Length: 378
Image (tube, rainbow, N blue to C red; front, side, top):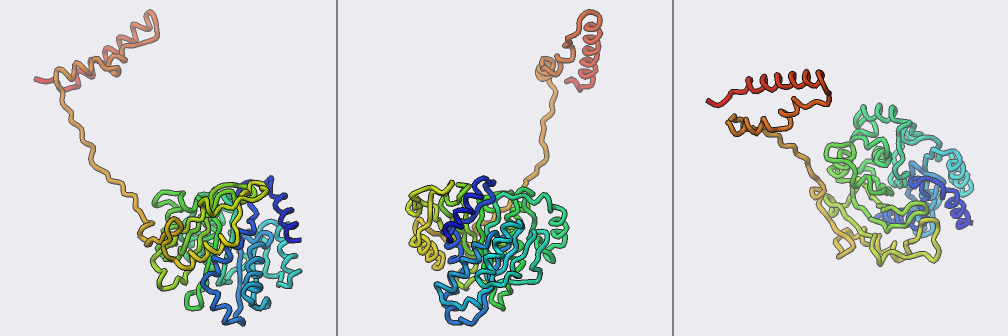
């Protein structure tokens, strides 16, 4: 039933824009395991601990559902201690998500309907684990006034670090999730988010894009970026990346960012039959390797590199200097000037007859005025 359900969702999405992608199950599995990579022992020892998982663009609930199944099936956590939260804009997908939650015994009231960015229905809530796949390249023009008003509040609101271009809301979702991170003294938070290349490369120094990246990196929250193989999604084949953002880095990872290159040929497993534009899948072995490399946080030839925070910073400096011109009039330069197009063009006309003679006379007068104004050499 689960496979049939995913097939119907995929077919429904085939005519949608590239940004409105349904997240494949293998990508969700990788993201979930990355988010929970270093808390397995802690959660297994404290089976009575309450775990809240949040997705601000929950869609039909795939990410939070897979996350809960992973914790309860793989790690043996009590399902009644794992709570899922989410908010979804579209009414139909919200209804599917809520119905699915109810059928699985979850509290449907924790699934909200509305625009997360302009109307957060979970104000005041904080979460230890968050994950999302915001639609790629989705604009926020319809809610621009609301977003800008909140940005004016600075860090008292959710968008104090800056605003990306109106054509892409991805960094707004990440800032929203950062605003819901649990303080470090209460355990901290881990965020897993699916991005295309825009948050990595858009914007020069001093732009909203750059200011947001600078804030996240200088706060030492960006833990890792995992590049995925291309052709992973059902209706887009663009390059995608998984960002792991957290405020509770371990001591040995502080001040560093791990880059994992999952976009290489040996990690691309071609599917027997394409599903839309999805030609490549991640096998369980590939997922395990990528998670292991991330967990270790150490350089691995051709697979992972570890950089200091300062390696990602740059500053654009504009150097202004006085305009330097050498102005000297000699007989030779005056002769060159009188042959120039500017000077001779004063006596050029397309008119004929008396009108032409009048234009030429005016032009000759201007020439005489210009020459008279120049301090001729003695």
